[in-house]
Image (cartoon, rainbow, N blue to C red; front, side, top):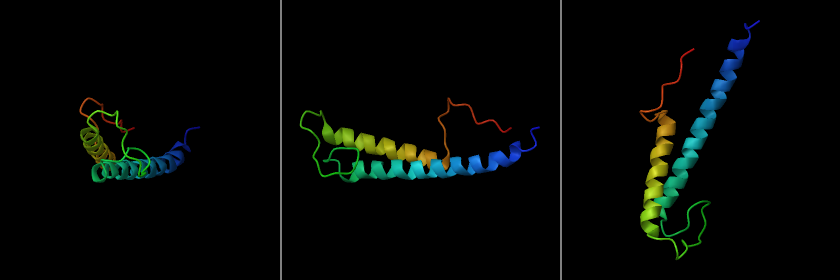
Length: 90
């Protein structure tokens, strides 16, 4: 009954790998955009300056960019925080 289960695991594993790599590269891209152009509003790259009411806009942009690059790199390297249990090998 469960003999075909192995054939389903491979495509889903490949899809998960592709999705993880794609998302990791996108997160790194947006993090680099925050680091290279901190004076502009974050999100979709545009030329609109950060709103005047945002406190410490450059600090927030650099901090957000550094966090995004770090998390994107962790996604590419498949690193997890220490409190997360490792994936089961079944």
